[in-house]
Length: 338
Ligand code: PEP
Ligand code: MN
Image 1: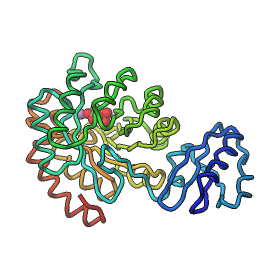
Image 2: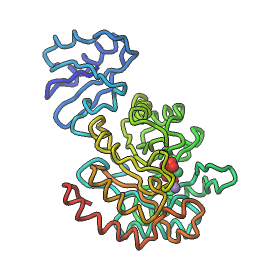
Image 3: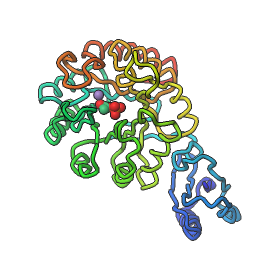
Image 4: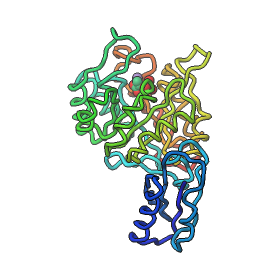
């Protein structure tokens, strides 16, 4: 259920609504929009309209059910769309956000080289994996703690906030200490205990779609984080598994406009993992922006041929810089800026 309050509601009136909502065993999540405040009420579904009596309050505009299975993620809760700030960088506004950097942090020189290159080309955030979710236990697993420190230092040096993957709930405190945003990878998209724990931190979470996760399931995964009290969730379409094996994944661009209809959360697209092939990254990045994405996640490595993971899909710095140049006129054409 959502309770839409009239404009200019007072704090005391809001407190009255929360109290009445909680009396009926719902949890109240206050969402302050630009124009008005709504109270999203979540609890066990009982099928009956338990909050209709709130409509008798003079400062309540209306009480309406959220018919979809996800509630706090539903567009109705915040029709104007959410904007999430990552250490001062806003995602979800008019400006597109480009997150770029290597698949994995491999050395000080490598991550610093990538950081300088992506900053120079105009990226807004630096990425790099320290804990790597590899299909094989024998493949490079990431530099872990040391990787986190190198990534943080490289980001600070060039003035970019950093994002890195969190795999294990036990590492949350450590990763929160070094990163500005925590990424949940495709392989953990439905790791509900991890998602719940990330709902209790304050830093933003970049939630990737699982390789076989339906859009509704993707939003239910986001709901796990939101329902624990962390409203700062960004969704990332990164390709799904289909019968096609010519590309690493099938980048599902249908998901972008559909997610924009169903949810207020910002949506970004990762054409690097979505295609697995560097030459397809720029065309699909442009297509993602044309489809309405709020930003991009692009893997960039100073020397992709020597990369310890995902070499075939990482862009060389020059190619990333060309991508950024080709993005500018397209962004303008769809009413966005870079
Ligand atoms: C990554 O971003 O490097 C990564 C492992 O991505 P995904 O979880 O989408 O496979
Ligand atoms: Mn990767």
